[in-house]
Image (tube, rainbow, N blue to C red; front, side):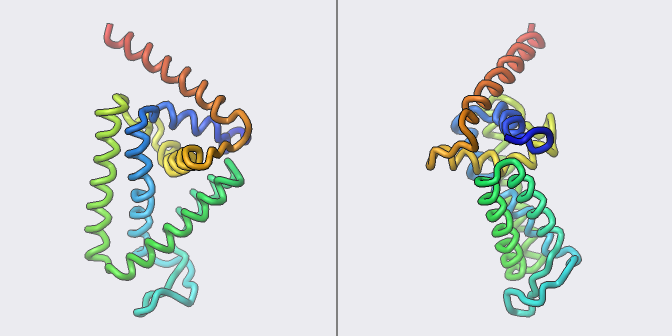
Length: 197
């Protein structure tokens, strides 16, 4: 149970307050990681920070680039919040970097940016529709962009672990975040009613 920057309960409750509808959570579960993956894809075409000397063939050498830096930052953030689930999420971040690097080397820049654009438009549109139709609340990124972008992949990852494995970062975690989410949503509803009246 970390505090401050790595306070998992605080971050999870913040993001969860904007994602309480099951359909909206499902939409985010399907679309958040593809957004992360395709964001890394374009970083393949940035200047390498450190060539690794091996690659995917066809003259494509794997290199530590901005995509690796982003995957590493996200992964470390998750590990510091929860060692067990965070380590799995960090591994997934690195696998996304490797997979996106491989795909970029196969597509080339002219196809890769079109693929990224189509995937990002599709996934972001799906998420905004999820908020408008099912959640009936604006996305978290409109209130705190960095926190929302950093937390989104880990939030849906933890939701999947909870649903299928009953995972809880520590005893009482889900009860604690549920209480915080309900309190925040109640405050939001009250403020919304004040604006209407």
